[in-house]
Amino acid sequence: MGRSVRRVLLSVGVLFGTVALIGCSNASSTTSVSTSEPCHIDVFDESFVAELDDEFADLAVTAAVHDLRSGCWYHVHEGMVLTTASAIKLQVLGAVADRAERLGRELDAVEVDSADRMIHFSHNSPPTGVLYDRVGVSGMTAFSAAVGAESTRHSSIYGVTSATAEDLSRVAVAVLAPNSGSITSPLEPETRADLRAIVAGVHHTQQWGIGEGAPDGWTALNKNGFFPCTSCAPFSGTYTWRVASTGVWIDDDTQDTLALTVLTDGAQTQQRGMEAIRIIARHVGETLLDAGPGDRPFDHARCVAAESGESGASIARRLGLGDRWSDIRWVSGNEGPMRGQLLCAPEPADNVEPCLCPDAAWRRNVD
Image (cartoon, rainbow, N blue to C red):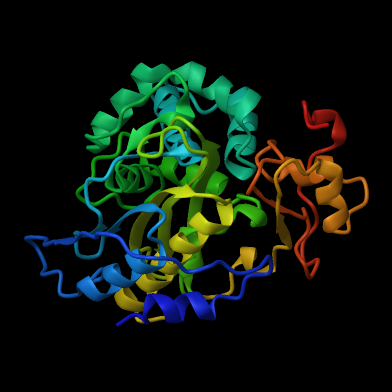
């Protein structure tokens, strides 16, 4: 079984600091049993959920794990609906690919370029806006219906899409899984393979989240969401960070797949939500796969949290990067700095890979 929440939290090596532990709240945890094979592991048992709620009483947290080996579902706060922030971009990718399939073609050059920037760096405008305009609310709604994401409500402002964690895990299976199991995917297997290749290119500074629990021998593919909101339920009227992560783990040998999604809201900093996701992801690996996390690209990230009113130039100085704020912003969603935002150096701490930033001529509105 997995370690306690507190032990996991204290064992996490975080280059940008630690978080405080606060309070208590109510919890719910459910396990859905497959008719084909018993779900013999209670991944989110009462003890784990109680500790999770104790450590993150300031947050709304919901999670859904689908084990395609058994068909089992495991939930924390099943049915809770939160806004997704950029985690919905994985569905944008799937819906654009679905549209191209129905038109009898591959992704065109604009779609490929936009998808790379949307997924690798989580840029909003123009890449995500271009793709979202192509599928529209109707296309996104149709994709949700096709995969059984029944609680998702799409908006013309894609970042305030509301959904359950299970909805997004269904999307992750339909977009990325080699075999979608009982979840209907409108995409051909070859298309899903192409989309896995795109998602594999997520910049190392954004490979935190659900992938941080994947053991060695499992490939983690994730799309995260991270953006503050002052008008998003259930924290309307308060500046809070919505921090989310969705995706799959795929066994390198057998292609067995787990889909995981964690949605959070209520944090005052991006890092706070990230800590909750990390704990859940590591617990899943320890309980379902009986293995601790492998070395992940984000382990080598060098990041700082923005203070209120802090300038980009100040962030660059704190990271020891001189006048390279535009590079930092490029790999941080092309936004900010925003209070509580995590901002990272483009290169990993040990410089094992080069910066993936395009030439300055391709940057738009980053200065």
